[in-house]
Image (cartoon, rainbow, N blue to C red; front, side, top):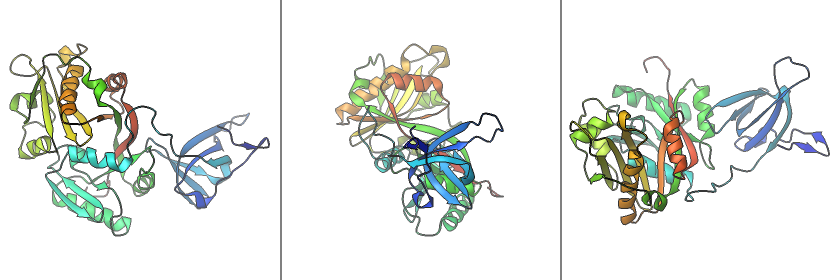
Length: 333
């Protein structure tokens, strides 16, 4: 990073730059000699009382003493992705939300409160796309009460790492004691290259069945709420590879929504991994999505799932943004 002007380090940011993406260099608080520096890049989400808060694309908020700054500047938004389809954050956030529809939803201004008896955080968390129509603390109190009435922990789903994402809300939740529990990547890619892969012996269905659910193994005994989420969405397809004992060797789910095809719930029998079954499932689903007119693909993968990350990277999926589920730690939640 280049911070100099005429050979001098300069701090070229101030509190009026809150909300912008910045790059700063500060003295590291190690007491070492010679002095060392630490660089931080992210959205400047607060500058009060001599302390800066910078929220990184990972969702982590870094506190920096103004007195430790040696250089700083505003930097352009994260560059457009060089691979995969163009997409704005809000478009993709709404598409991914429709793929995991809640059983129950209620608007709170431009936020949406979502519940499905606890099946998947994505269907049991606040989707805060816009203004809740009231002060943030009031909106969070309303959300907590709504989830408590349903016997569910209050979660808010917040995105970071792309133009138009929600770093200020991320920092505000952290400041109010909400804890970030899960972080996942939203990745995008072209659909045709996935469809060109070898599909193998994969069977497709419009509805989920008992055998598919036994391999999915995410919900225990599936109730109506599980079936409601899995079968919900604009155009849903389920894939399975025949296995033994009535349990598929691999399964997957795809939701086609206009130009987008979303891949999810890809599960492979642990004893049959590294045989290309996950790839076969995705190829078969991609071909069906292409027949329905889709051209772009997305998927969500937790940041610690290294095997899946390697698979999707090899298929050409690139990171678009990250999302995080924050949970309220107030008493009673």
